[in-house]
Image (cartoon, rainbow, N blue to C red):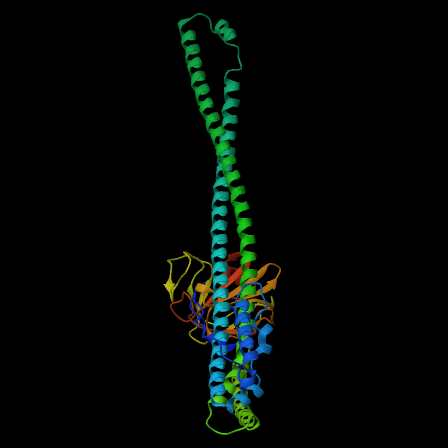
Length: 454
């Protein structure tokens, strides 16, 4: 139930897992006049090499080769020459394709890393459950061993009291009468049975102690494995964050460069005899109109948010993450498979039936640790509140994440809109509470802080 969504474009669309870059068209000469052809070919080769380098791990992103893009001077000169203009159009289309390829590659890597994170969390959860089971068995066995030891001690005390008188003395006191001899034989028989019973109780006590010790050792091993998996999950989280930051950087570079490249492409393909200055003036006016519309849409959206207001915050500092009834409890459940993902057999969350596009609020103030695509979670936000406590919000609608990694959010602040992405059968909020890496029951946790879900 994996990509960090800092922009609307990234949140609206993600490539399928394992998406491979499309075939790269061969580069052509840089737009310009014929005398610059040799230098242009070298420039294109440098750009292609830089694109390949940019897709490799641990290498700086696309910004490193931004200076190699064609300038407006190149484009204007190319338009004055039919052949150079065609070559410039081909080159710019190739550059746009390479930008898109780089975004696809980094997104695929980010999704792979977030899938690894989800698997690491699942492995940790299973190890935690197993360690708890073994520890419970060890505790039960230890209690049984203690009881068996106590029983053995009581029988030993009783045997001591029964056999404390010397048998030869009993024979003298009771005489050689037939009745006394029979009584003595009966006592000896009872003592023999008691000895046999004592021996059996001691064997049971020893076995119980050995079993308890063995289970205690197994519990210690399970806790050690749990700790290893906790560290693995933390490392997976850091890798996922790094991969998604690289994907964000590639996307930002792509969007920045594509705007100019597409404008240059439109200029080259335009039949009008405009100068660059005239074209740029027209584009400036068009952009101003787009910006005006964008600001108006943002104003309306912000107004809608303010009219709804933040969630009420309890005196404890905690707030209800969403309004609606409980549609899924914390605990075991059937596996759900939707949208190409399957959930775990244990539901580590509380589902709140909100309907679609309902506001999601931060349950407390804290720092956004993760914001983006997360496998079966769909679009997911995780907020770290400090003190080892974090909260998670899953199945957010595409384009519905309103915060980014590293951002500080206040208790009750809207952070997203509900949806049904990932392994989800309908619009709702999948709400999780983390204590360290352990996901605990959100209902009881929130109730203890004066906030009642559902």
